Image (cartoon, rainbow, N blue to C red; front, side, top):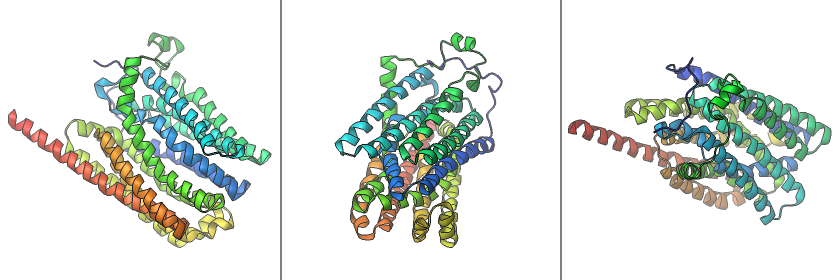
Length: 441
């Protein structure tokens, strides 16, 4: 029996936004948010030295995988759990606990690696900023559950604009990366407490209604339910951590093999993938609920058709990126960053080639999660990361930044091929079970 609180979304009940409408809102929100992320690194390249940009990039490389492990894709779990869905407060409590654990782990790792205090401050402040984001994300899960994608987009847009303004003002005044990132964290906290957690954002018309629903937006803790949620979600947390390691592993090899300056340049060039990635994430999130419903209902034809559309979009984005990089890459880098970044424009087509394969693999990842293939993704991503580490080990020392990009391309191909095999096998099994059930009936 479901323990989900009563649905107060009566005006929208029985209606489902079209995929185009959801995608439009999600795309706009993610586009502005991605632009904010892009602007953050662009501003840093113009306001501070490449070495300091490299420190920020190293902070992201360390923080992001751990915070994604703490995230555990609770947003996807909440939207695909059906009748077994727990109360929102249980998800919120688990997110708070895992985020605190991740931040503690980040601090311990900086001590084990003997980072100097300046670098440690940067890493910890990046952790604070992303920790706040993970809390907002669990509120997004509740909004997405009720097809309120517009509210998620408004939050993303507000967070992006305030973060960029705070970073620009604070970094310009202080010339400090740490204080600039602190401004970003403060901006994210303002959006979290000023919008994401508010009753009206969730169509709870008043504080009184919030209390009548037994504190619908408040944390709840039940040890048994927390263990069940942790067991169900942990494989996805491991999957997304392993996925984010795809972008972090090259950074560690570059930092220790070439230097922080080259890491700063590599991070700036890698931002070009985020332009296509925002469309991938937007379309994937918009299509996720439909993929989940189609697979659960046994409509494998609809599930497969939607995946084909997504894969075509991913390939198209990558090809467009390669063409733009080939013919206008140097001019774009000179405009966005400094001249020393434009000197490595020859790497851009290779980055976008890796991006094209990665975009398609990401769409298959949405499909596997929607179909409930959680544990298989763990093994898939372990294989992809092992191939990435091996390729970085052999190629970075010999070919420098190009070697890091080629290693990313190899790992993306491994992920795409194995993902396709897992989904194809699962779809065949589902079809066979349906056929046997139909014959038995």
